[in-house]
Image 1 (cartoon, rainbow over the protein chains, first blue to last red):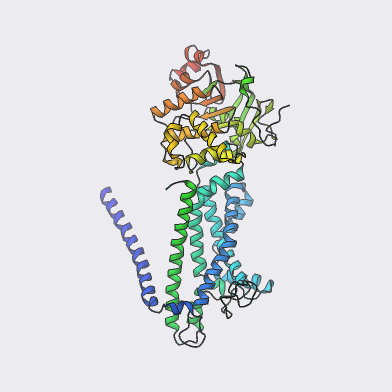
Image 2 (cartoon, rainbow over the protein chains, first blue to last red; image 1 turned 90 degrees about the vertical axis):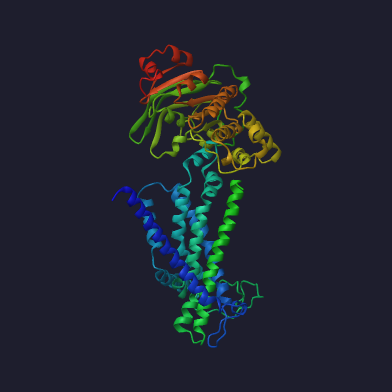
Length: 295
Length: 273
């Protein structure tokens, strides 16, 4: 076999792999959307779920998912980027840094159910909060922090050393250089990492079962007082997210329309992740264009 | 007593060149040794750098000239394991001393790198970036400095209509002149140029060379170069380095026409390196 044939075969193999991946993805999307979208209506999205009767919606679950996502990201992104900056710019090479890095890697590979159990002990029992949105968000922070730290560290490290030197050589301090030169350059990769992490948050069920709980109190969306029990904004209330809802109606649901609800919810979940991704990328590229002055 | 870059906000009171006389020394280097871990890269060199002159550092790759250059504004601090012994005296202070405020020092001793490295920001912001950090916030003031420094770097006419476009849209030669402009904007006293035109095409190279000659009116310039013609064209003094030693240091004309050391002559005539 000459090298030309080998080259052709390699090209063929990679194209086949790409086709396989794309068809799995398209098939999955098609299946979920075709089976799910017919159950999705405005009523489905805006009415609360029912425990026993058919025709319940997913209003609260959808809100809870986004609310937990927001809260998690609010905690995890600053912490994660801070950790990434430390690892990339401040940590001196040596044993301690190696240990920290191994810890981060181990943490990143922990099964989410284990983090759920940890969350139960820490954020539910030890704090005495019971099942809360905050507990769920903290558990998901534990789950996502290592990923964001890793992504931020890599992103910061891959900023050309030239740029850092250029800034330092102009008599700018290290922190100001990080803030105004390195982070803006690393921004697109950090954003991609945060988007991946938020996809994980959105789809996560196991870590939330024992932390945010399986129920949602009766919510009054007109009540904006975050300390009120019926307010959706209260972070100390239990909250069932969309992913948890899909799991719970399928395993212990008493409603007659389990299939309709879970298919519909799955479709909404997939679309939400998709829309969130596209939106975050779009906003990210706008910001990046603004700071780099490219049009 | 001059203690300006010992941890206090920098003022420009060093920058009054006119009160100084010609042929004065701006830097005195005494027995400078630089190590990377155990390896010694510069072996105890001693030389004085003249004020308002262009000093060229020549020598084959790995001879320690860039290492030496980077020690003058303490850029070697960024390299783990790099350390220096000896003295570099600037304004009566030893730059290498521990308690030097490196940030303030680098405002006085600016550097331009081999590869053009503009920030991925607009042309305007490339220049104002460090100025803003140094405390100049007024738009009118910034506008003036931006124009001035781009004029001095002979770039103004080419970019005046697109100051707010990305600096990365410029050609390599323009980018390098922008890097020179942003260094000029800080009003340094010394400019260190690390092979500033080696990555440029001949026309851009010529422009940068003209610029350097022009700049020595206001600044003391030290330039590392691999290009012998460049060294002979633009520099007043030339230092020839070999394996970490300073072999010969003299007026450029002397080095290129009648060097005292045989090695220098061999290197200049291209017999090794």
